[in-house]
Length: 472
Image (cartoon, rainbow, N blue to C red; front, side, top):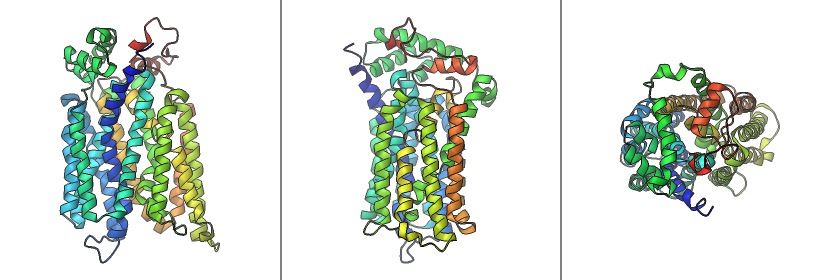
């Protein structure tokens, strides 16, 4: 019993370091909001028109659409950790270009590269987190995925309004360099070593993660090895994604949740937060955006403790319901402001309240569960490919919502964007309760069994003759 608590800390260390990549992606997501005041100023050296701004925001997602599938292949060739280290140079290049090339073309190229990094880390990080974690903490570790993105957004929100355009880029460039150095301190995924036939390195990596000697993790290693050998009997191409009923159901769940997550409005809200929130007395729009981000972080921390206790499905349903209500609140305010004679500025706090409600509910379910399931649902031979396809869908949906946000605002009014986000969230409630399977407390192999056999899987510690410590 005394070993149970200490043996988890290295898994948390590895997860925190790996999700620094999401911190970096959060920086790219949060960068437009505090810099819009500079980019919209005709006196600025980097002035952009409204159409150029919409492209500046959206081109990030063009980059993140192109990188996931090649990254899925690369991570199976070089490893999860090595792939992150190699592609972090792309993120570094993006910030260097933003600092040195201050014109629309340079900004587009830099944002495109930042998007390529985002698509890559969205592909690799969920897989790495699921493969290093024991079943009982896998949910908590995966909750760091979206939490670190919020912290990255907060980083830009706080620093951006207080420094120059160039200084912000230089400071941001320091993070990718730190990330590469930190990755040297954690091991590669033991699953990757087993896929590569290197059992000795797999044992060493697993013993480090579990804080045990190699002979003490032999039982876990044997179970993992058997699972990998069974999975690797198939070569793992696109056809394998739909070759079995279990894979088809897994693909349906992950892709629909990816679309629902983005159609609930998160990409738009992160990019246009300071522009969408009206001034509240002495509190500026940037100040409101920072408060909103603090709420995201607090409830993101809450989700790391809740997800392995409450389960994925229930949190997802509650989260979608809350996001639907929040989006409806914002939609009502924008409708009143643009389409009626009512002076909506009398209740200028109402959309801000809606965004706060959104910040409470999104992190605890819709923010973390889709990415978590992305790494849990597939066998090891197609896990990288499936993650790449899912990340591509996320990027395409994000590009669509960001690019259409301003156009819909001009054509019909901004309220219609948030009305669509509310309807999408409502659909997410139904999908979570009727289609998504519960993965709490189950090993990756148990999840595969349930997808294929449609039976109730054994949970950790319930009716199992094996030691709980051997559940990975």
